[in-house]
Length: 143
Ligand code: FES
Image (tube, rainbow, N blue to C red):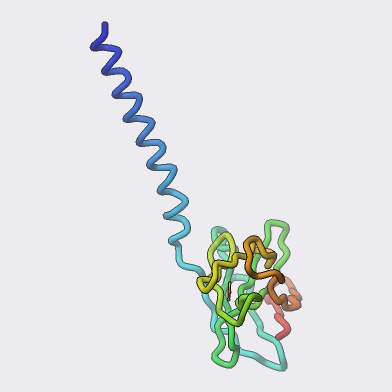
């Protein structure tokens, strides 16, 4: 009887370890998916971004333009709205790193959520936001 119980505990612990291991790895794997980037051209003070740049599993597109000092993150929200933020840390002038869950500054550790709000100091101000207009097929981001 004692041997059976020991075997049961071993198997149960192995199963639990597997479940914990898999659940710990899955978010890390999904966060490894590269973010979509788009080379946006500035025309008359705006960047046009086709909405088809957002895939179902991709709610974030990074706009890169050599004339912009900082990249722009465009976020698609579940309600179908889009918002665009300058990826410049508001603590000091430093570029932010975009992740699927928010924006991080490696200089002093500030963090911002996908709505551009500060979630971790030392930054005190939210991210600069750009006006985004949509015609259903294209986003017009006013720079
Ligand atoms: S420059 Fe970003 S936290 Fe200081």
